[in-house]
Image (cartoon, rainbow, N blue to C red; front, side, top):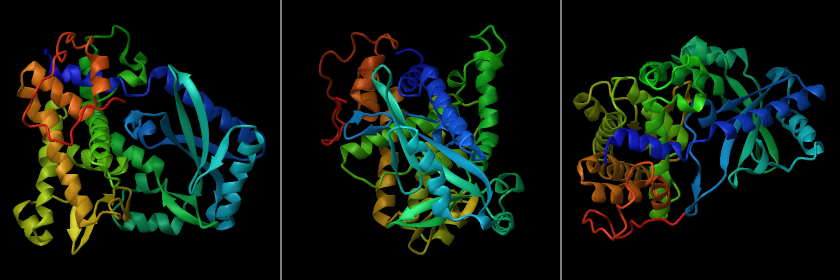
Length: 392
């Protein structure tokens, strides 16, 4: 099947956001920013989450690929001490609603839907109103070990629950900077690799082509997660924030020059170590596994700290059952995407379909020079009864 590292990357590119769609989203949120400023609001709108990190994958819900969900912060240049969360939330919402856009309110954001942007695919913009966090809270973050360069961009976002508005915490810029600092060595390796492909200066290469293997591992895991948890009909799948944080934490100790599949294998092996916490006391675990702090368990609480806000436990919703299902998922990732790399082409194709979705793999056959593979049914004993090809 040729270069499986390159093949896997090409497959994931198909569910990554295209350069055209990314540019369209950028123009849309900048238009919103101009409109808010024209109405007298001093704002800065910028991407957060996967769009900012370069780890977007097309969402997979109820057995099919759906429109992209892109997140943005709308930071209002106003002190928190002089603000009320309801007023901040509505100051943004009133302008958006009066603009004639199809706008709806969620707990933390305003949602704008854009249908059929490219090839019958659209996206939604989630715009989160925010103000800069109080200085005392920023100092507290620094006191807890968060680097000043990350803590200084902490935000207070608006949260609406039961029609009551309150403040929540966020730090989109700080998290993005933290991730970029870890990703930089991986990106540098990819840039050197790309120089053999592009004649132009590397800075001229579109952003969507400059993805490190660390970013690709995150995208692969997000896609496999969506397929796996849909198949087993479980709702408590690991959030994208958890996947990104875990991979980045582990990536700090990885060789940035590892090929894609070897980096994925390194991440999976590291995550599997933490499965021992299901039966082992945390102090005993640390004695056997020095410097393993990526996932913690204190008494019955599972903890994955937000790297730019230690008080924010990304795994706060985890129970022992949630954790058990997470580690079962890691085992399946290993079977579908790591162990399978040593299979022959037919069995490898079956494993890819199980892990990433049959339609996605079928769409990739031409690029992978596998036109004749998979035409006849292939029986592989490792496939579980609940694992089925998904007709997205």
